Image 1 (cartoon, rainbow, N blue to C red):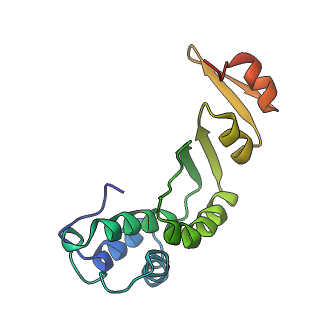
Image 2 (tube, rainbow, N blue to C red):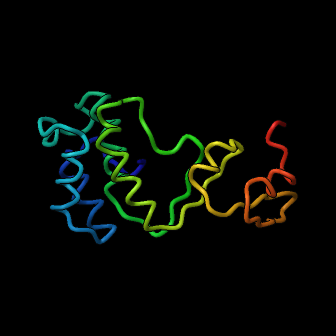
Length: 143
């Protein structure tokens, strides 16, 4: 998340971002502490924290904020940090279940998993489809 300020502590960053998005700062901070799995680095400036903590924290802030629309690519906001993802994935799934999600991908497995409707953008024209198979007739996934 590019809006994080490495001179500020995690707590200061969370409270600032929660205010910008009109979210409860205490709840947002609590959720970020849970997702990161630590309390020890929250009072330090982010620039002094480990790269692991900064990566966890950045994703935690992203997952902690509810949005009406999510635009994600086939990599999704994720991490190779298994412990973090065990806590974060249910939160993210809850968020996207209550929102509009636009997935940009050429991977059928990702689209089938995340989408109920499909569209193909070709030469500036967007065509909508009810099934991935119909969309696949227009867009060659193998190419």
